[in-house]
Amino acid sequence: MKTTPINYQRHRFPSAIISHAVWLYHRFCLSFREVEELLAERGIIVTYESIRRWCLKFGPAYVRKLKKRQGQLGDAWHLDEAVITIHGEHQYLWRAVDQDGDTIDILVQQRRNKKAAVRFFRRLLKGQGGEPRWLYTDKLKSYDAAHRAVMPTVEHINTVYANNRVEVSHQPTRQQEYHMRGFASSTQAQRFLTLHGLTQNLFRLGRHLMQAVNYRIWRTQSFQVWKESVCA
Image 1 (cartoon, rainbow, N blue to C red):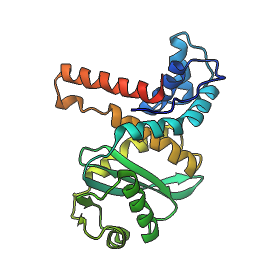
Image 2: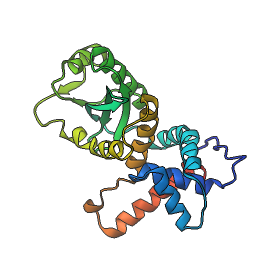
Image 3: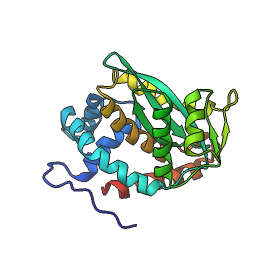
Image 4: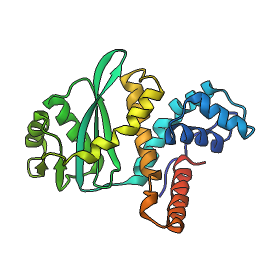
């Protein structure tokens, strides 16, 4: 797969260190200062402010690369919205996962009405390049309205407990939101959670579902995909 390399020129540290710092921040529930300390233990002296700038600058490029490598996900979409607080105001984090629990996409919006649902549906269709076979949601009426307007031929299931998979997927976001003491803005939340979701998809391998030897093989492949994507 031919991809345009990410430009790391005019940076004092090599791409391997920069990408590793970004990976640590988005893979685990860590602050910039904690990432700084982990790097310092390895003899890499860099400030937390530099790590923050690296995440801001290279995060969007990593998202584009990882999305190309990820490709199309499952054909059963589980959708849900969760409330997040930004500067004391409630906003809604719309999330879609497939039947394997992999995050398809997320979108931060101020409303959870029909217009917001339609916008999220169209974003999913554009990103996945087609419709799913099944659509699982809760009983929010905005989903019914958007389903009729955007993809009426898809089977829509909104029975009790049918959407538990996506509701569970909000837990890492809650942990990170608490650790960060809230998101600074909707743009920052969108930027962080998009790369966070792609990173979790790549490294969330279901250790309890496979033998140790197979887990190590898949983990090695995940690291290889990450390195190729970030050109480290």
